[in-house]
Image (cartoon, helix red, strand yellow):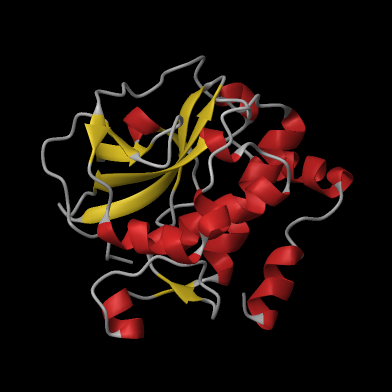
Length: 210
């Protein structure tokens, strides 16, 4: 990870007291306002995105799956504050740009080491930081959707005891999956280094938009 961006994102992982203070700044979006529980249904196996496969070859630790980890995140005020903080700060720190414009390739997944990335890079960096903060990687799954423009898009699904919540670079709001307006296609499995179907019919080849 580039030194400049690394310094920026390391600053996100500050003391617990500061993170707890951030809960008050969430305003209308509070832990108490979240739904009780609503999880997306897993409907079988799915084919991975090709760029994810290459990412896992290059960043094996980011794709490693420990079935001994909790399958759900227990949302507490401190955990919620950490999620809100990381989501907002990564959205602010990374400059959005398509892989085609940035790297002259159709689709590449990485951790936005140079401070530039598209949708999946935002979410991968968020997961990296949240895992460093102690959240179970197994409960944070990269997810492919069809967005409001009918294009392939990547978000990060947090599987929690309050339902499946979505981190997105298009908004700082952390929404229940069924309130995003997206069509959910597939996500990483919680049981293997693989993907599972969420029922969406059209599966994009890439997640290349900003």
